[in-house]
Image (cartoon, rainbow, N blue to C red; front, side):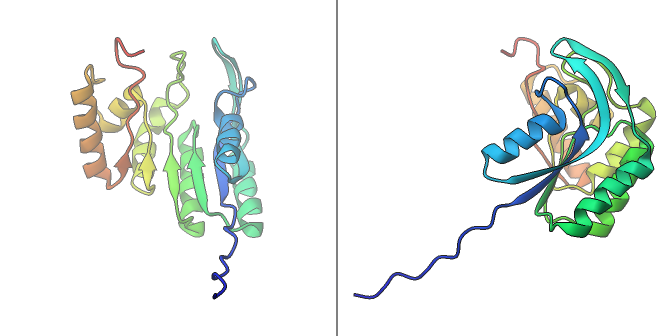
Length: 192
C-alpha cells in the first residue's frame, strides 16, 4: 500500500481593502475585513476616508491627505505580498489617481472595485468631478460591483428601471471598459 501524496497546506490569501470607514461596521473597511476573514483570508486595510455615519445616513466625511494614503499603500505593499485588492470608497479625483498609480506599480493579481458613489441612504460619497476618473479606474480592475445608481453613472446613462435594463447596462459597461461587471439589484423598485 503506497502512501498518499502529501498536499502542501493552502496559503491564506492576503487581501487588502482600500476603503472608507463605517463606525457601525456595516460597510467600508470594517465590513470588508469581516468578509475577508469569514472567507478564510487575511485582511489588511488602507483607509481612504473617515466617515461619521450610522445606519440612517452619513453625517460627515473627512478625507486624509492623499500623501498619507500613498504612505499607507506603500507601507503595506513594501512589506506584504498582496494576493487581491478590494477597493471601496475613493471620494475624489486625487484619491482615485493615487490608487490607480499604486495599482500600476504594484500590479496585484486580482482587483475588485465596489464603486462607492452613493450610500444606501442616498448620500453622495464621490465628488461629481471624480466620476470620469472612476470610469478610467474601472478599466484597470478585474471585477466591478456597482449598485444600480452607480452602474448608471459608470454607463453615463439614466438609472435602469427593470432587471433586463440593468443587465444590458452592465453588458455595455463591461464591453466599454473590458471588465467583468457584477450588478447588484437591491435598488430596483419593488426589490425586496
